[in-house]
Image 1 (cartoon, rainbow, N blue to C red):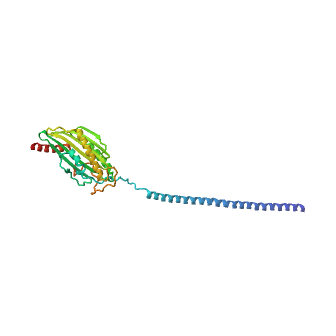
Image 2 (image 1 turned 30 degrees about the vertical axis):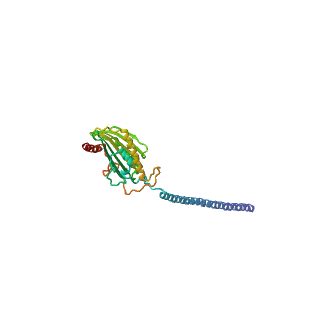
Length: 319
């Protein structure tokens, strides 16, 4: 091989070696740049992942704390779940024998003693009654008998129901009881206006050996108090039977007067405006739904008939 040829080959080999070194250097630089470029991306992803997790945890913790705080505030602010019962409006009763004026008593029971017979009661601020008996003796012509009874029951509010609710229930039972009197004939009932919050008049005839009795029962409720007025009349020993319509009218007027006395005893004036109820002199619980044995419940017409028989016999013997 000639010397020139050897020189050219050596030059080509040298050029090829330089190209290979440049390629190697270029490839390493590219890999380095690629690796360097990947590092910020990884850092950014890692940073985002870290921030996202941290923010989520922080947010959840914040939300949980806020919920607990709100829940505690709501629990503290929420009122008690126990229902509240309205307090009783009326706290006392008037004197039972003083609920009717002298004029009214003279009209209904003209021959009755000036003072009525007060019923027994363990708490007159919760239950009271008074009765009057009148016998107008006309000698051989017979006698006119009248009997009047006023009873009042006041109900106190308890945990189960208000005094007014209890009074409404008792009022209904009183009306039903009067309408279902044994032996009653020609029974009629009608609503009565102007006697408290609600009132009903029940009237019927009751035949007894002493005579024919005309019975009127007026039941009235005003707030938490129930007033029951019984009024009956009979003509005895040959005297004529009294007019039922007149007896009903007298009984209803008397019932309105008794209701007005209850209102006055609790601070209500004639104008109807009420002030604070007068406190009861004795602490009383709500009376039972049925009349107490300790109080004088309204006697039946049969009981008044017995009184009439006794007084009529005595009057006849006297004449």
